[in-house]
Image (tube, rainbow, N blue to C red; front, side):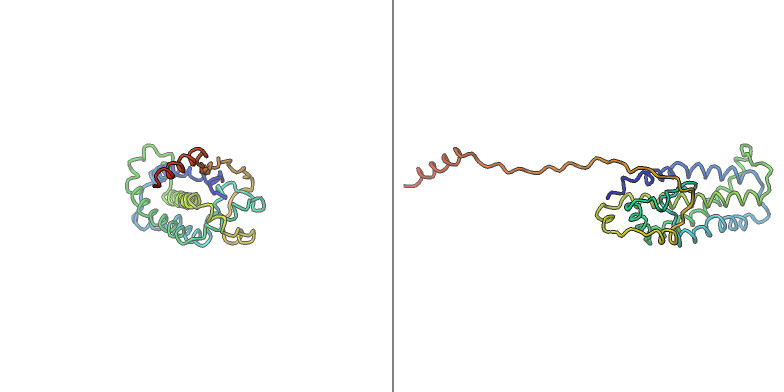
Amino acid sequence: MTPRSEPLLWLQLISFGVLPLEALLLLLVLAGSDPGPLPGLERLFCWAIGALAPALLLVRRPADVWSLLLLQTPLRGRRELQRRLSRLQATPALALATAGGAAMGLPLLWWIDRHAAVASPFSPFSSSPRLVALLLAALLLALMLWQWQQLVQSLWLLSRKAETVAGTPPLSLAELEKQRLCLGLPLLLPEPLLLPEPSVVVPVAVEPEQGTKEAEGSDLDQQVP
């Protein structure tokens, strides 16, 4: 039972490239409107809606690792290995990583909003109201937090040993529905990856030839006076 045979865990790693693109989109969204009289309060409002509130939800109910937000693996069609890995999501380290991702969202939003005027000539959201820009930015922050948690969870599960996975009881369907945030249409049914098993070399003991033994015995007889 190796977690590396699950293709969705590898597919979640695409967030490495998607997160910088979403940060660039966040810059273009905020560049389309001028800051109000209290920009610091506006940034806190946007961060609270887009990062703090979703983080509280995702710490309590982590994002289902078999969900790609729009599509997911059906609950009743999940393999035993997938349900074992779902139970391994419940660890304080992943909850701290989610909270850390939400905390990093505030300085990121603050920095992007302060420098958004540089990208105003390229923004497709020019002349949009400030409230609309803040709500779109909050939506992007929530999406980035979701993908951050999925990325951290996938890296964590891919690093688990087969012995650890085999000793973990699978999560029941009722527990999945109550303890995991399962979003998306249940249309994903990927086959597990066929990974080559490592070959084991068994050492073979080589017995000395009979002639060698007799020669050694005769040499010993000659040495005896």
